Image (cartoon, rainbow over all chains, first blue to last red; front, top):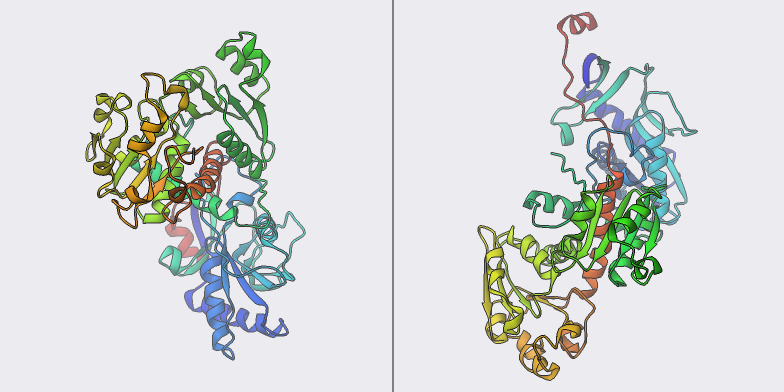
Length: 182
Length: 330
């Protein structure tokens, strides 16, 4: 699939500022961080969750555990032909029961990834609450799912793709709007 | 680099990379066995046909559980079933199952090559759950996963296999698999069960030797694989069970000839007091229960590979910036 870059949505500095702001928002709106935990959705939700947790430590020394969730087994589109999935383990080292969870991902689009992630979490136990934090909300929801914490909302069309590049995964740091070309 | 498998007929044709890939893919499925809720919907709507022409309990239950935990349904053909007694051929039986549109067949049969025979004639994937004395690939994989988890790597171990190797498809799969990782093998048991031809199974970088005394076989062993004594075979030629126990039983004293870190594996079912002393079977070096749990994970990974896995995020090429578009954006 060939893509063409149309514009840069966020630079490295902007990403960092946004994550700092999201960390503050989450602490502000959580009424106590005792049961709070962040769950990063593989792949790019993971470094985002880790960075948010680190930013939280800078705010009153709040120390929030971070887990990682691989949703491959919970996807609803495994029969579509594309690249071979790389199945990885989830790593959530704390019990999920009664926890106040924040799911973290880079882009919220149709909502199917988040639906899959919730299925995965419910396999582990019964969280007290699940809220969603995303860097970019690009609209076009196909399920009734909403993010409580949003870095940036961006209007997009169906042929456009939001590409998040994070240094931990992609060795560069920016968010781009790209377009599919035939 | 995608590894695509259509069938799983044996370990011999696989590369070390493919094996490593399958073992890595088994890890999330090991983890799922620890969840409160062990049911996934990944293979929902798929059907796995279990065609066991030879009796089996543990392997059949393991495959059935693997399928069902992935959300798939099963079709269950068992050896005692009447159509086989009525003289129906293997091909007809399998075609009958196939006409009910399963998504894959897991097969065990007493004839070596049976799984390949069926695979050549059906479109759907075939998983060999044991064919004659040829191979039992998922046993090889689960043994490898067990060894890798306990020891960190599969490379270059001294592996001793004890017992009736002549008739063991498990031993052959183990030899093929661990041989690809440079392990060195010592085979030990009654001479009639250690044919010389086995020595030629070693791929480059590995070696196989046959040894008469168990003491010699256990010295410097890193992994000991104990095979079940198939009592059905004890008359060809005659070997009294008492003599087998005396010469070849893995006792705690004999195990001490190896190392404290030496692993003891057994494909099961074990006959306590025959090929293995109960104290060894229950001791800290014994991996038998882990083998069973790992068997479930390996079979789930294999079913996921063959039936589930065709899609994830599309592999995007890095975006090509067209000069005029980039200029216009500024």
